[in-house]
Length: 58
Image (cartoon, rainbow, N blue to C red):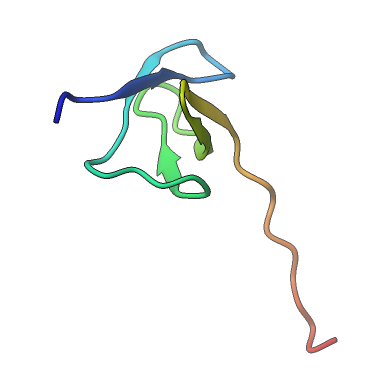
C-alpha cells in the first residue's frame, strides 16, 4: 500500500498516515506537534483532535 498523507489543518504540513489508518485514530503532526484525528479516508482528512475532558466519575 502506498504511504498515505494528509494535510495538517493547523500548519499545512504533509502528515504521513499509519499503515491501515482508521477513522477516529489519533496521530501527531511532526511539524507543529499538534494531536490530530483522522476524520476521513476518502480523501484522507485530518482535524484537530478533541480535547479530553476529565471524567470525575459522573
